[in-house]
Picture 1 (cartoon, rainbow, N blue to C red):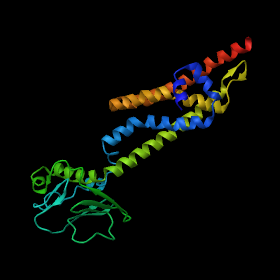
Picture 2: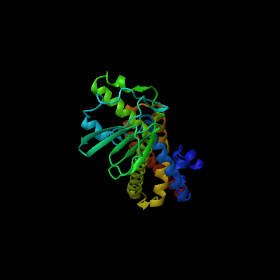
Picture 3: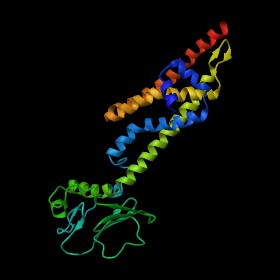
Picture 4: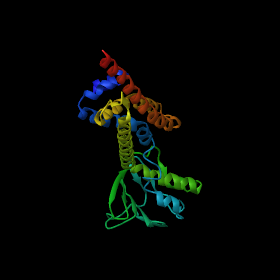
Length: 278
């Protein structure tokens, strides 16, 4: 793959890539997809996933629970060490949402079982049960500052609701990040695979002295190698972390890849024509 990478910076060498085994280019293509997906994946990791898509408390946010924060127990607080309290008592709060009734259990006295649409705040971990009863486990390691329920009650309702529910979402951020990164990478794989196949078919129309210059497999190799420079540009933009430029790099990638491949083929065509005339 290193040879493919270095030869991708020369138009004449790009055309010569067509003679190499296709399997090497398949591996190189998969590597480039990871590079192309990096800018958005980097932002996903920084922002704990696609907000709104993987948010555990999405339905609760829309419903705006009436009990929050007024009915929270004033003797409780949450830190990285877990849930703290004075009175060892269980609290249950129910909220009707568009997706059904959601329940939040704070300091459960018995293990939760056979529950759905439920969030359980235990002393050391947070559990989430979806509509089918499948569960996810999270912890309090993301809580950087102590969240005192008594202090929440003094805040504006919208601010208190956001802080409380964001704390819950943060417990499951690893799941959100993994899901979001996987989805973005698969989308990039599908889009770029489609781009490569379409361009490889279109480039079959290129002729030299009314004769085809490359085969479909040749075009695949040339196009994949031509993705190197645009992919590196997108990678560098991702390192800068400028979201406003990320959308532009997608357009730039889709423009530069076929342009570089086309120039490489025409450059190679001149070499073929020169050899025929000698």
